[in-house]
Image (cartoon, helix red, strand yellow):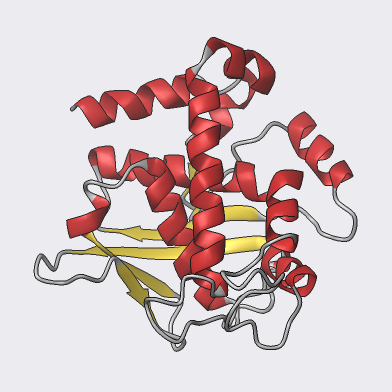
Length: 228
């Protein structure tokens, strides 16, 4: 109950102009509308040189309801807000691995700049005809004995999320997990669960930290003024 109340409070902190767009689920296209106003959208687009705006779209949400559904909606909103910022672009391009090298592990021979462009282009391996969209097909499952937070396969669009972890995750942690799994859809992988400098893990951590900061900004009067 406390988590549900917190989510509703977070939603209420968004600018009133964009509030109606925040949670509208389009049943015809099975997608969630952008959390940003058209003015904010135009402003963000103007900040990019070569990369368009990447929309986070929930194409199917199986097993989510109540507070859990609100939480995943909030994760979509915050993800879209942070990944379309110049700060995200800078963090990805300037990323350095544990060796101090400006490159990701398991990078498929690509530079940080090229990885950023591929991410922002949003062409999943199985959905090359949907540029500019991070299409998320999510299914909640429950395996209390598993240590796996979530998993996916190269043969399907589906991303499976373990309720064992999701139920206790905060919005920034859900955002990180979704970013990690969706990056697999772009063709990036990792050699093991310990390869934290790989593209999926590193981008997930970047989004996690940025969403956490954005949530804190929204929670303060000063932050609300800035975002408005």
